[in-house]
Image (cartoon, helix red, strand yellow):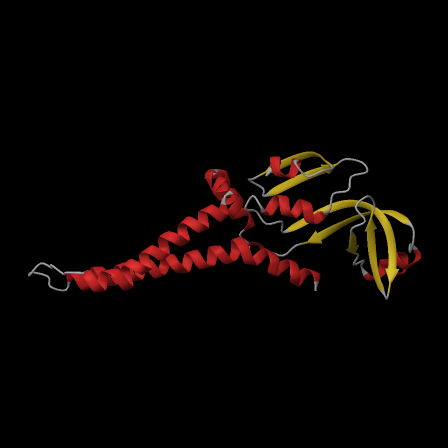
Length: 212
């Protein structure tokens, strides 16, 4: 993840702690990087940015009752949600350049279930999982092809050409083995489906819900 974040234009330094599940990023003065670029750099390594605390320089703009921050350099627009006591202050700062400390919440499935720290700890023990996540398209393509071949073999090829030779002492052995194979196959399909959803669909869905 450190290398990926470092590759974002405008990043000065990166400090990553897999045990804590945290990444601290220091930006260069006058950078034009956006939160989306940083988020993309994190997600392509198999992680999900659940929440980020940032200090951002920009100009306060109040339009149609909404207070937003136009970030200096990138011109990215972030909606500001001040507490009730700070609302009059935000209106008074309309059009002025400020330095804002705040939290950008990016929800994720793992955070909802409180598994963020568990995933980080798992990755610290099994770092090769990060390598797999970097090649998730190839990983899921190969896994999907193998599952498809297993489906074809189980439901189309074997029933047509199978010749059962079971032991006379246990005539049901073949049927039981076949049933177990099908159960294991559908468990694999379920795991693959959940993994595919989290790897490729969850991020875009949450991003749309966040921007709605």
